[in-house]
Image (tube, rainbow, N blue to C red; front, side):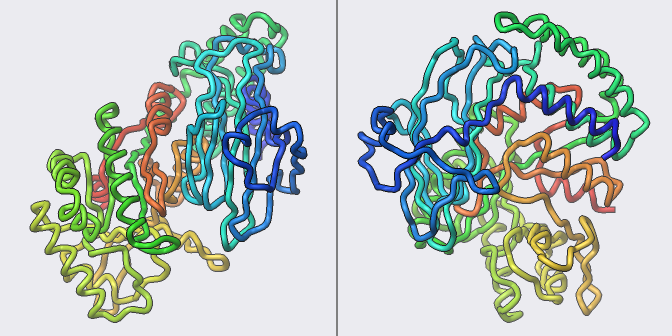
Length: 484
């Protein structure tokens, strides 16, 4: 990293320390499956042992569906590194690696998750006062095949109204990080402008009772950097809500139907508050089950599809294995999928959406074209452990000469993380020279889809002058833009 870029990174880290506090080492633990009513009480934790972190700063325990209870009382300090916290909201950002997870706040269950729905930002207090405390308990069950872990526990203080007037230091830190990524890649001569601006931050005015003077310094910083906004705004990150769902993997088929219903109901509910949301899901087999067993839910989905806000993204019946099965099997996947979609949704599908399939037959483009499918999308080629696939966008040609335009998509199962999104978009643009990228927010593998918090974060970053244009799209719209 160039010295001027490193200087920006240093300032961003310091800004984050004003509103973010790592509490990973503060947990106490029990390996007994203590009754919930007892395990969620702070008085119980006094007899529990303090945790030890491994070299990755994780709290780890053995595999085999073993229980780990964790508890801690989080008390709002007067300030962080001199930055006064009163009136800000408090969230706990945690990530686990566990088959099952339950999070309790002051004895009440507020969040459940699993090995895929594994990251959350829990609102602990919408407007903190100095000395406020919250009791948090977490029950985790390790995977059967792998050690369990609590990966991250960070307290985040941010503006309660989510506005940017002014943003809190942690948000400005992310803006600086995004700006640094883009300038390093596309306008390195502008990095010194950022360094000169951040060097004027009024660190000396930080007091333990007033943050207004420092906030004014943040406002001045953003005003000084405003001329650089165009470099970001001539680029675009398009969003498409997504929820990958394996029909049968670590669960029985009845659990698949439950996950599908829960996912689809969640998306429809979110659309009431976030009408801009577009959502994509493959697997006509799931829609057929909904049609038979939940006709009310199916009718609501049909309305969203007709309105262009819900996209069935695959012309195959399911997201199948495509390495071991016969050509006849693949042909029937396409035939049954396309017949169903034309009958129920009024048109055949132009996309083979296969984000989680391990390996693809060389003849697949020929079969796709015969099924009126023009595009192939996966992200599984990023999983190679030895030979890294070099392309993001490419023509894939079958032995007979049939070609499909193919996209190595962004990873699935991601949230709305501005720094991670910027890193991906910069890499995409450097490889393709295309300033428009596609990001797929949403919990996946066992369903889930986008969350309310993800969508609120997206709305906030739409307001930032130091982030690419951010808007929702559909997969077909995006792929048609890429098709020369």
